[in-house]
Length: 537
Image: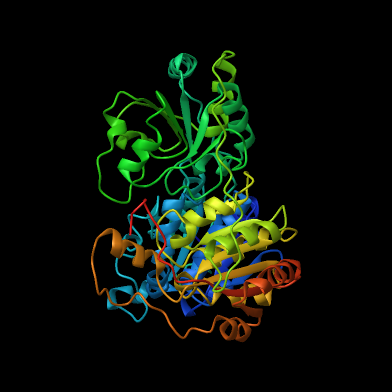
């Protein structure tokens, strides 16, 4: 194929046209030599978002995609850049975040010589944590591969995809490619839905377990309507990374543990459990899951066929959340069963010095703007956060589904890039903060309305807790003394302050939340070992 007056387009121009057609207005990246032909003469209508390390780049793109509900586009540097990014690619896969990742490859003519910066079997590198991965056989195939990567990324269950592009492909001729529309909603099986509606109607004490797919679908209000019609207690699935039900609603029952025994005990009083938009169930420690054997009737509605396939008991319906919730609400008859008793509201924790984590979470809840978004990566303090910092529902809460650290700070930057009229609050443990701290620079450069709160207990609190659960002693590497987050943040261009006195906490938070720029608040808390999975000390 040659460039002619009838065919003036190149691989690059066709790709940029696809991005515009897909509604992608930002490209996230950290550039290298193999990306220069793609980045040269960059167009003014597509914003290039620079991250200072590839893991942060992926995290920013992940948060941005979740905020916009459209696939983000990422440009990484060769195999080394993909290697740096893999941890957060894994998290994007577990988050089911739509994302198209491209990476530079050496020129095709010198690939047989194992040239500097070349990637051997480039498409295999990110597998199995991408839905689709390819290095096109010909330059003119690149736009089609990128289009397929977008369509695959956006199909439920969503996820990242990968295209390796040799450096000399971008300037080669390519035919224009039209953007296509592919529907993304999957309707539920009508007969299965009727059976589920009958089971809910016959239940004496139903429980609904909500997972992240509800919030991702923008279907929280529909979930509330269904729960109110069914008069069902609503629990949050283990490790749910979004808020799919208002946590001060009278039907909200609490958060399910990732312990098989504790989860079974929590749901024991329910004769029917219906799981919406989540696995059945995600566990973290060993134990006997009596719920699969004690006669509890189990149902699941999921947009992930793999999640349906691995469910060990009960019935599953594969469908997306919006049509499924609407259909089920329409099928349910009125019920005379009593409304479950409301969850007890915890008392206000008392101030003390050093600052208790409970008091910090309560004070954040009091000071945070009502429409703020919370992005969290403080695993050891999550149970305390869930107790004292309730989320309002739709688009209010984000965390990572993978358990891998280093996602939430850059993700908060990506979310703030889209939600510039709201305050984004990023709650980090001190250990978590150090994984992708360089994301602060991007936030500061763009003057994003982001407040980062570092909960500093001078160590890996979750590991301290697990060492007690597992009854192991003298574990090295759990303490993190001597990190000055204020100086780090200031060096990145952020306003920053340290709080060690509970009397000054409220004022510091209010000032941080009111700032028009990116701010960091380091809060020194007591080093009490958190209680996870109900262990006793």
